[in-house]
Image (cartoon, rainbow, N blue to C red; front, side, top):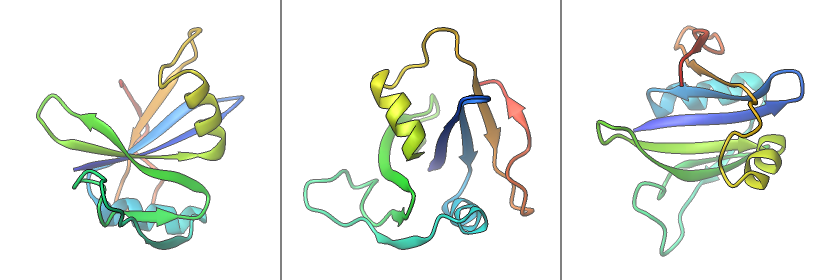
Length: 116
């Protein structure tokens, strides 16, 4: 399972951090000030979303499809990203760049931009 955090800032556009495991994503959220407040448990949700952590300041968890290899992706969005991303129905338009970083377990915020 992969975990994404989507953000938006006027000077950077839409960016996403991708984490290869949940523990790494949770640690990152704590470092940058998103406080964990329980886990998602609700009847009728996809099994992939059951028990996923919730954070103050982030929308989610949300199912974000699967990779070509069949790995489930779980997405979280900042309020600004949610506003912009949702108004575009989940697409990046108007040539706005999408920067993707792979999270690192070393305490950094990512390994730098990679191709989406």
